[in-house]
Image (cartoon, rainbow, N blue to C red; front, side):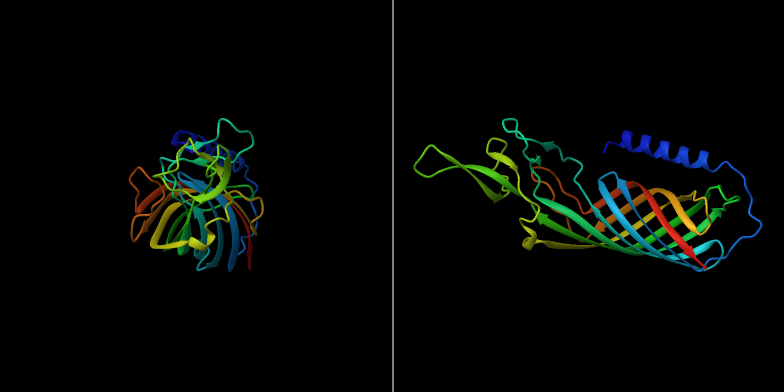
Length: 249
């Protein structure tokens, strides 16, 4: 996703959330909650993510959050290609060695600094999370056009991508995701994120929110995502997420 597109989506979502929160129907009593469960999906500058959270309120305006996030991370130079001579073939990224995913268990601290003043208001919370980033790579397999021995015919065969012998001239399409699942490699690292959480739910025991911020994954060594270019061990990201959940007294 381009940065300009990302920022445009971010602006539109924040504008809609804040406009929704302009009504001022005040409640007579504020309930103090003890715990919260939520989950959601998001996009970041190098991929997509899904998240689950369990939170314990430490006061009316602060909570300790336990989170598990799963995300894919793409190399900034990935460009999808398709076979121009065949219809209905799966696209592939020329030069891509591995698909890269990370699991992020973390502990977070959330503090409301603009509380919700009405049933249909918007509360704003500052969030910080710290934890592990457990990266996994799975090699890319492609369907390759190979000439039959001692003939002029060709076969379509599954092969692990080798940048030295596979090119756009003999790549037919991307193979099934399950190919290479037994060749997963582990890349341990650390994770942190900071952001702002905008809760616009119409009921105080429900959570409907948009969250925006920045993430940083730091791995112990470079992650080999792409051939023909530099790979990295550090991946900064901007992100936006939608979360839904509920609170209990």
